Image (cartoon, rainbow, N blue to C red):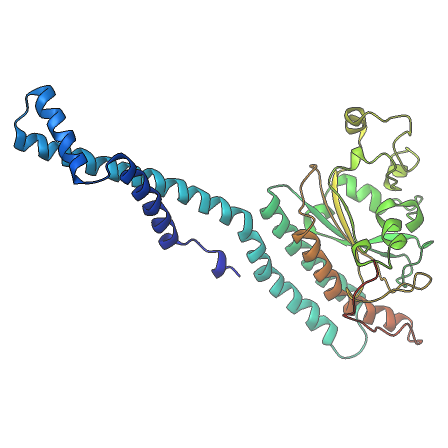
Length: 332
């Protein structure tokens, strides 16, 4: 993928010359134009005909070179912007390659999955994802994994806790305050980003929560507000977007949340197969791309499912829901 979007000097030269040639033909349709310019110099400035012709041709060549230089620069800038936009997604493949090698190595180990080893592997994965999105968005993003307090399958009334965060977020006081507050509970049905996913489990598009400006979301609920003594949400009377933005106390304004579940699993709404949520956020609004960024997170969540599933089975060896995926069309 990286090779496909790498810089292409041949393309730049070709496009620059094509545009230059068209412009030049318009200004000087043939050699006569150069000669005519030379006669202007002869008649206007009294320069010898021989030298005026040479100066005329030289002026045309200079104009040609200048036009080509301008067009080359123009297409070079366009190509650079294209690479700046798309290269991070190519880099993402390279970065995730090593991260998933670690995830799969941990999953393939014989015997039970050690919780400490799993957390170390998932922390590394979150760190790699953070680096990917930092470079792509030019914003300091944060990743975390939320799971049930008892490490079981998530239900609507399940209380969620933070299993791991990326290394940088672990050191942020606001994140630490939420993670270390044992008095505040975080049930699924009191957090919009979680229960919205449950409400649309029957639809593939519903298996993600995406919002690029949370302060403008009037009905947004988040139990992290409780840690700050705000009752789970901003006051309902606060409807002005600017006022809500000023009153916003969470460390993020853009967010993507995907369930840790097989991507093509058809969930039973009464018994979904979700072991947690992978959460990506940014302190700035309008940070993420709903098409590409969501697809990366869904693929990662699908990839880490087997590891967490194996760990859950090591805690409870009793038979659980059989994982059967399908590529059949999703109901709309």
